[in-house]
Length: 235
Image (cartoon, rainbow, N blue to C red; front, side, top):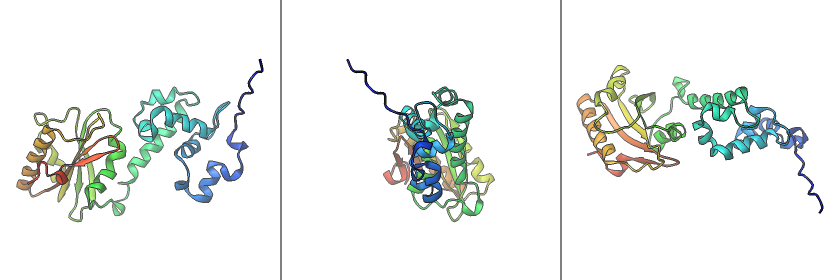
């Protein structure tokens, strides 16, 4: 019986210069690279039989894309073949820097003009959370983001949420408006009866405090729902 010939393993150095991630980033910009290539730049080197790009793609496949990498426990990532503490730290640090970027500079604070703007600000991170988190986006009079505050972690239901806690930071930071956001770890963003009840109570309290409650978003896996657009809890 004829033995099969093993497929050769190619290193990044074996690729033509125009196909190497670092060179492609320099000439074309980071937006031209695939996720696997961007991860490869962080990893710098692969292992025997796998280039850094191959390792990057394997990690994306293993954890279910960038959201999965964000959600992955540090030890799970560290223990993958070709990883270790240093490389896992580099990936986690890069993801965290991306998360912080949007609120880094006051003059570049995002402006919220629609539910989609608010969802885009938090969906990447909140869709990866394994527990329910309830947060508020605090806005100034021009709908610029002042801050994003986490209010609750765990089960979000009408019997546990204290409405006063939602407005504490809004009052302290003199916010003119806020948007309530929480996630459904199941991935299904369909609002529950509790979600509607909480929304109704928050909207009424906002009127008393002269703080506009612009919306309540539920974040799921790749989807989100605006209770304001659905007419749920808002009158």
